[in-house]
Amino acid sequence: MAKSSIKLTKYTAEYDYNPDLRKGWSLLVRASDAVNMDKEIFVYHRMSGKDAYTGDVFEAITSVNQIYELPKYAPATVDENEVIPYYRRSQMEVYARTLNELEEIWEYVQFDVGRLVSELNSSRILHSTSQSKVKGSGDLETTDIENAVALQLNWEPAGSWDGTNIKNPDKNKPGWLPISEFENTIGAPEDIIPQGAIWFYNKYQDTDFKNIYDKKISEPYEANILEVNGVELLYGSEGAFGITKDTVFWLENKNYQVEGIQKNPWPDDYIDGLPLSYLPTIRLIINFK
Image (cartoon, rainbow, N blue to C red; front, top):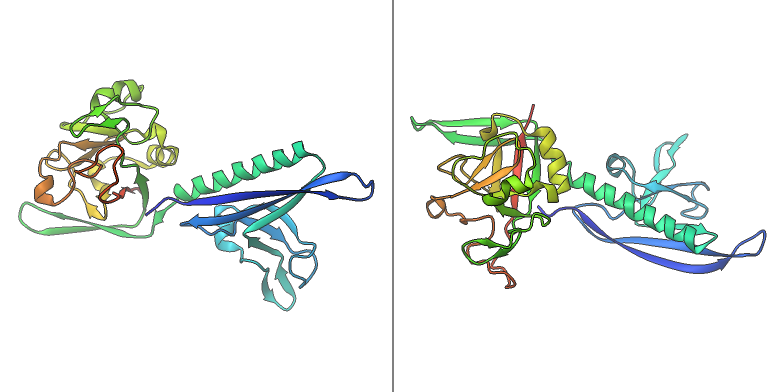
């Protein structure tokens, strides 16, 4: 699933205001091109009965809860005697007396919308999922996971991929780093590196991922699921990945052809600068109590 994102477009215009007849500035912001979220992110307060928009006041950027609680474009009527006066729109209008004040408001809007997008990307809670394992006896063991969070990972190498190795690894880039960079990236590791690890996920360049991972990941690590394009990968030395308190590790993945999956987090035919044959989607499903 693609991460939530949204486009903000700013419009400004000079206007005359009373009582002192000095000049001022209006700011209009429109939200569009929303991905995995509503574009109606501006909370308004209905001030004049049933007259839509006239005199209504912009109150705030919506919170995650308000996305589910507040209606779009008009207040909700509870009964003939009660109306909840708040609703959401896809554009906001405010007025400022100076250009500096207008720019400050615009900066606050961008900051708050950024916070909203970050929170949406950090709170994709799964109501239920299932994890199945085949025992040595051939019996199928299925576990229902009631409390889990799904986190999307970046698939790209954090450096230049030459077909065999990551050249010029950069710990300031998101994605996967070679295991040789582990000590330089993870300042004080809490666990040992899994046997057979070749890449590790640079969580420090994925704030949304790191915030949830650090809070929720716990043993037994094998209870968590890593998926690539919806396919669940095998955990451990004979599989594709391992997990510690520090981060997610990609292993040698010796059985990738048998499993019918890609060998690395990126497509097997991936070459820097060339179009992809497909876009990998990697997500970690963390099981927690």
